[in-house]
Image (cartoon, rainbow, N blue to C red; front, top):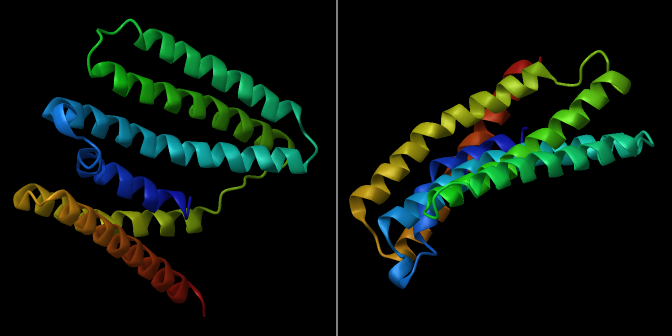
Length: 193
């Protein structure tokens, strides 16, 4: 969570401008860019959940449990296939793209939930989340949101060229991660005697 939360916020907050970068020619329409942005926003959260799944799966393997990861894989396939199949019922427009991103999120949620439940039952019945560390990570992520909102406003107001837009996005990312790291450092320094 310490690593994934700021990256999720960064991609989710800047999904629209990021989606605008690869759109070229006749594909550079407002509707397609909006759908790509929606897909990137959903995938931002899916990558965070996917990280939880990956770490939980490795923890189960470390306990020589291969049934839990296999079950998680089956449930991920079932969840992703179910949502993906339902998405095919949508009209063939931009809504399908967002729906397919939701299928990825559904698969990751099913897998992450499975490994976490299995870990909680077998390996760590007392809990495995350091609430103080999670609170610090959340505080650091929230601290970056005004910067990211300001960056989105700046990009919308300036309407920069693509190269400048890429530079602004990279700069915003670096500033947001530096701000996040500073909040973590200050929070940990305040906790130590």
